[in-house]
Image 1: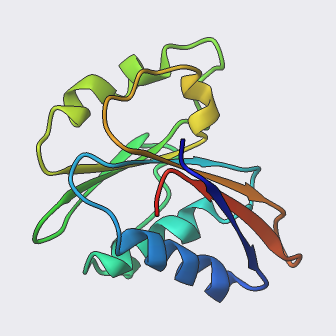
Image 2: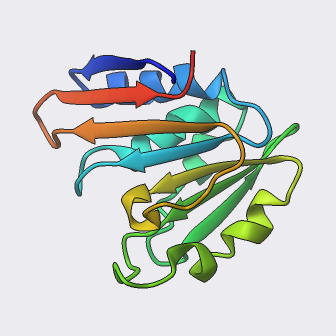
Image 3: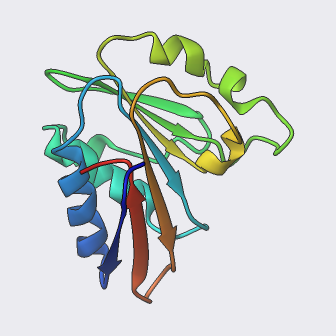
Length: 147
């Protein structure tokens, strides 16, 4: 069992930097499961991850309407998935083609609203990031599954 680490993000820059720290530790096959309310900073956290992987963050947008955005870095294919628009009862994994995405040997998967996957059986390393707070207040991030 992996221990959990708690971070306090006092600003959007802090949220981005914590994402960057996680991004530096990711490898092909990793899945980052993000939970938190609207405005919690999930996409900003994802931008930090992609910045650490050498991707132009100006090209990173929330996939709320597309469901899945693909960002190709020199070494990894980062799939950014947003399950917010899917009904709670929908088979979210099927709707976004998660099985096929996870078959990609270069894939790193970042999933916003990951709680909608319920008990999907990930066979690779899963990093859970729970973000509490939003807007102008400090955010508390609890991260588990990564050293």
